[in-house]
Image (cartoon, rainbow, N blue to C red; front, side, top):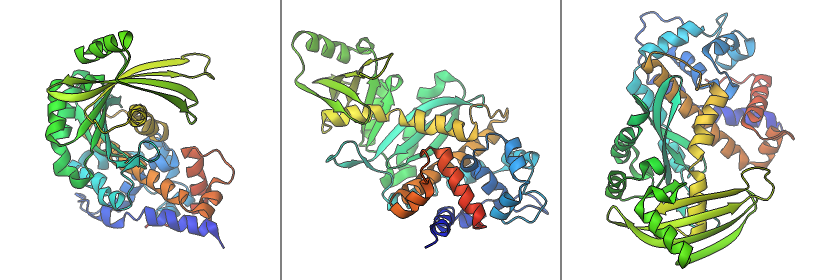
Length: 387
C-alpha cells in the first residue's frame, strides 16, 4: 500500500480551501493571478516555514511550488503582489475565513480536552496580548486537542490590553455560540472585579495564575492561613511528563462577590540546574475543579504564548514582520492564525492513523518543521495539487 499517496490525500483533504477562498471579493479588474492562489500562498507560509514575503517570493519561483498551487506562470506571485493584496483585502472577510473552521473543529471534537485522566472534557479559552511586527494584538485561543486562535484584535499600546480583552469577552457568545469556553485561563493582569463580573455574566468560570500573594487581599489572607494552620485541602504528587514533585494547599475565599478557590502550588524540578523550584498562586471561580485539574490548567495558560505566539513567530516570523499599515498586518496574521490551527488539526488527524503517522515521522524528531518537511516531500513526490 502506498502510504505516501494516502498522506498526500490526507493533506489535500484537510486543505480543501476552494470554497472558503472563493468567498473573498476581488477588487481587481483584470487579474492575471487568481485571488485564491495568492491567499493560499500566504496561508501556507507556516507550513513551508516562510518567515517573510521575500522568502515566499523565492519559493513561488520553484516548479514544485507552482505545481502544488496549480499555477502555470513563471512564478506564482511576487512579494509586492502579496503586499498589495493584503492592503485592500476586506478585513471582515478575513475574519470570517479565520472562524469558518469553527464548526468543523467542533464536529471533530477538537476544541475540548481533559485536564487530567478521568476528568470531564472542558472547553478552555485563553486570552493574552503580545507585540508582533510593531503592533499590539490580543487574542482568544480555544485550547482543546488543538489550539485555535479564533479572535484576534489589535490595540494601541500595552495599557489597552485589559480593555481589548473586555471587548473580546463581549464578542464571545455572539461569535462562538456553543463553542464558547466554559473556563478562561488568564494571568494576573485580568485579576479585576470587572473581568470577574463579565465572565460570570457569560455563565463561565475563570482561573487566574499569579506569582505574588501580595497582589490581592484574598491571596494574602490565604497565605496567612497556610503559614499558620495549613490548607483546608492539601495534596501532593509527581508529574512524570514534566518530571517534577508538586504539593498544593487550598482554601475558599471571596472576590468580586464570588466564592473562589485559592490555591498555592509548589513544584520541585530535580533535574534542573537553575530554577529548580516554582511557586505560584491560583484563584478560580470553578469550585468543581480538583487540585490536579487546577494545577494542569495553570500550566496550560502558557499554551497561548508557547504554542501560538512563539509558534507563529517560529514558523512565519510574525515578531519581525513589520508593516506600518496595521490593516495589512492584521489581515496576514488572521490568515496565519487559521493556518496554524488547521495544521494542528492535520497533525492530530494523522496521529490517529498509526500507519500514516509512522510513515510521516520516519524516525525523525516530531517537531513542526520536521513534520512539515516530510509532508512537503510527500506532496512534491506525488505531484499533489491543493486545488
